[in-house]
Length: 113
Image (cartoon, rainbow, N blue to C red):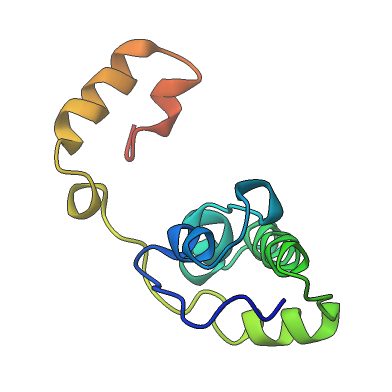
């Protein structure tokens, strides 16, 4: 497990590969899974983050302590506002229109619909 010397956090998966890890040796987890609890303080978002972090840590050879993970993540729970769709998606209007036209369940994904 001493293979990693430096992780480039802009490209963490590539850093692992560059340091000799095989693609199937580590978990790839979506940003929303790991950090969604920061903008959505719900129990569901928090449990998703706990599960995601524990799976990621295990895949890197670290056996996570549930209480420690929960304590660390709990300090950030609901700590920042969610980004507005237009701030994070360049073509937000086109995406919203396409989802609205697609009907259920996709039309339910349009903010304010």
